[in-house]
Image 1 (cartoon, rainbow, N blue to C red):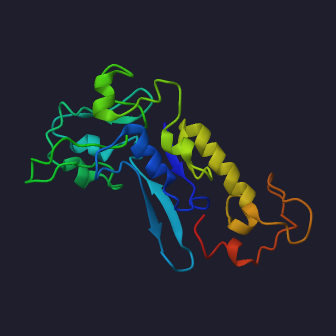
Image 2: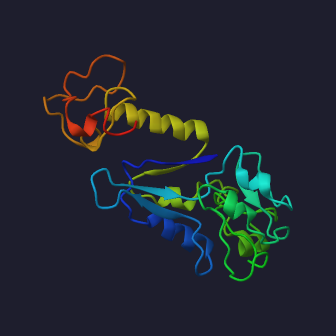
Image 3: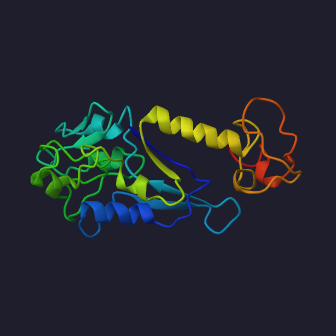
Length: 223
């Protein structure tokens, strides 16, 4: 189970952030998910929704001295608040800033760590009151997707089986430009400049696309 955020679709509405806080009734100051803007106010500006990415080789799991962080059978990275000692090692190890500490204080007295659970709860019995108080609602046990992904109005944030969402993203990239090499707003959402429909499949040349357009210049933006 993984997250993918399509930066070409994210509009910085923070709907995912609000949905997460509302669904799990998070404490003040805790944001399991946040929207980060890159190149703010200049050409090439992009927004990306960031939370725990539930890494296959999670660095937070590797550094935790109490082994409170673990993988589920679905590959979701969860933690046990009962075992957490608030040392902060996971906070320093995570490249995404996912671990949060609701209480401030001296080192080793931060309180229990909190992070995105992929809406999968914790080690307590599924959908129990104890689980909800510590980790929020267990939507995975209810057969649902994470609240943030379901709330996303532009479907920029995808959450679910890694193979499925990776295939969805691959199809989007191929539709936007010439194979997986080119992409852009004008190809994904604009009208063909030379008439007809965009050819989104195969490796043949896209004869109805202006490849010199800045939105589709392979050397200007990463694929």
